[in-house]
Length: 296
Image (cartoon, rainbow, N blue to C red):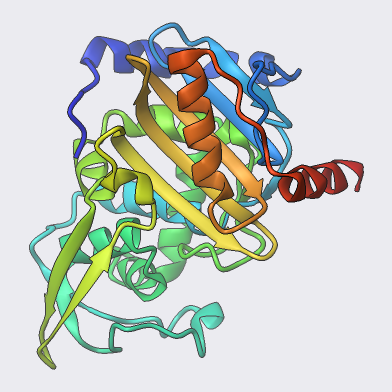
């Protein structure tokens, strides 16, 4: 869990600044530190300065980063977090034959569903949250898109909450807006930054351990207030974070990175650059992938 918090004044200022972000994203702002991801945006939250931006307006699938919006919609509805709800994916065609450790019909608190959704990127958990939303699954997806519109995320669209759909798309510049909005959700920050969670289910009773897919939350050198990862073959490796880098509170977005840990390596590279001024090399394979993507 984060050691720093954002003041209400800062939150208000950042939200007011949302309307100015399209101007920032029109051209690249590239630091001396190269990054491997195809689409990048890093912003100093105090000054609103863009520290690094590449292809920030490019629209692409965002995989499980979608779950961050799903969790925000659940919290907006102010549904009881201690209420036990059943694992249910019946209204989501894309969830057919999707493997999961959690059993259909078993029950767990809505809070634990949120935690599994955010830290372990559990697809059944995210979809179950939608099934237990007022109006059901379709109303939930509609609320996700309405929230995106309200935040002026004009390049963003959701077909379902898990991120398995290739039609769940956004851009780095839009996701910066989502990160800025998330500053006013203390529960979202608390739940997403947990390193791990032991969850007890009922009907039937069983226990499972879940760990954060962002391995940086386990590092003492990192102070992460909020995070979500994502991956599909179409989306590549994705990472969004609110984190501290060299005593700066930053919003960090990388989309479509090549390699299992490249999104995390990009975060480490940029943090090290801000702290030391030293430039780190990007692996040749990742450079080649990025060049190929940018010529398509």
